[in-house]
Length: 246
Image (cartoon, rainbow, N blue to C red; front, top):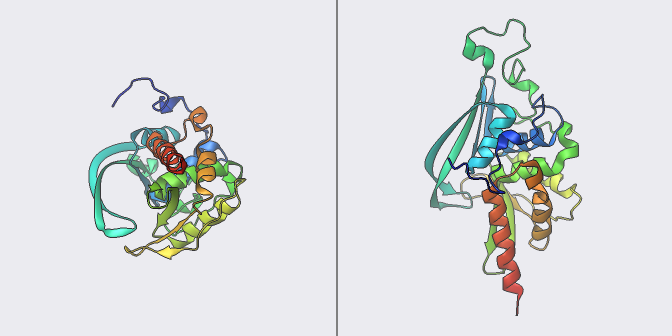
């Protein structure tokens, strides 16, 4: 792990971390966006994955847990016939009481201080309660994008594409609502099925640049972002601008 000091790999331990990972706070909003987008929540623990090492370290700084790294091959979300190999970082957050063997007699500890997953804003039953993060919609959406979104340059049209892909239709419907309620005008498509059996929607190409720019605006000040994803956005925007040049 490189420790060289660059603008994109600031030590995540220096980020502002809330005392309660369920409180309304930019860091908790970013964390739970990631969990909803690429995580799994059960009574005994939380697992969330990301392809960006620094983002994984930030998530660990926010909520604790153990990080593991592996190289995986998986189907491309929009086309199951295409596979890609990439680094994957998995953050595992266990039940403190269960791991210590002390049980839940007082009902006050356990997973992130809650006795079961029902006390969390995201649980294994597909329930999403993001009301506590209503003042931090940008960080919540950034976590969702990095958890289950894609950014690309569309060479045929010379535009930037931003889309969200997930197996859970309800989560994508909620994400669409969050986007339409953000301060940047961003029209969204209806949900469509992917070839792998999930769902996806995109942001209108004309609105994608402004939305993406707003989403990552000032993110370096908080450290709540994946550098690789921001670089992908910046490259896509540059390619789109060059495409328009005479």
